[in-house]
Amino acid sequence: MIKIGINGAGGRMGLRIASLITQSKDCQVKLALERPGHPALGQDIGFLAGLSEKLNVLLTSDFPGKTVDVILDFSHPDATMPLLEKCQKYKIALLIGTTGFNETQIAQIRESGKTIPCLLSPNLSIGANVMFKTAAELARRLGPEYDIEIVETHHRFKKDAPSGTAKKLAAAVNSVFPGKNIPTHAIRVGDVVGEHKIIFGTIGERIELGHFAQTRDTFAYGAIKTGLWLAHAKPGFYTMDDILQ
Image 1 (cartoon, rainbow, N blue to C red):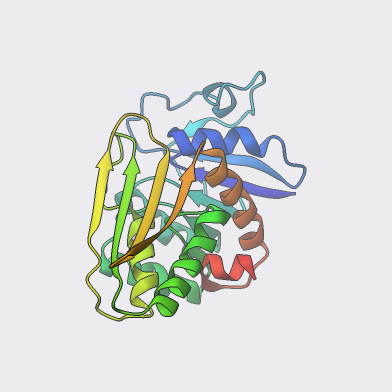
Image 2: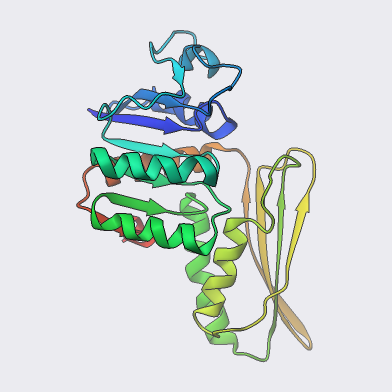
């Protein structure tokens, strides 16, 4: 039985992951971390997730040491980086679904792969990660004469813009055409879970490739599946390509 910790456990994604883990026979929630001062500290994560029974895991800001096999991080860069140090100290695998890191922070995350299994992905949906590969293939086959733009839409509470997924879409195209400027449009409205569309156009035609998340469950299931894989992995810096092989 894999023991899972959640960082950002009091957020929308953290609570949904906690709820869905209870449906698995392969893992359990054993640690629920949140920032100091969070109003729900001390409450049972099962109660917070709307479950009928408590999980006997309290939301806490205190890191207890080596009590879990892997931590799923959906928080904020300012919370992720101290967590990264703790995971390295206690040799705990770390899955990072948080976005908004700068290049220095990303370099530090990559470096952690020398001591722990670590995976960083802005989008843990299986479909979205297949889309990244498809976008690169479209760019290669269509050629540089096609205009390319990205449009992404999220809920009004998302802080970073453009999204990490949009940046990864652009990076997929830049793997084919290095340095190509790809305009990206970020829309923040209502409660949209996440929509991404990349448009290829030339005189007379256009191709649109899109991914539309209908619920957060697609990301939560992907996070749980990836976390279980990471818990059994050797130290290294991994990507979703490793999961999809």
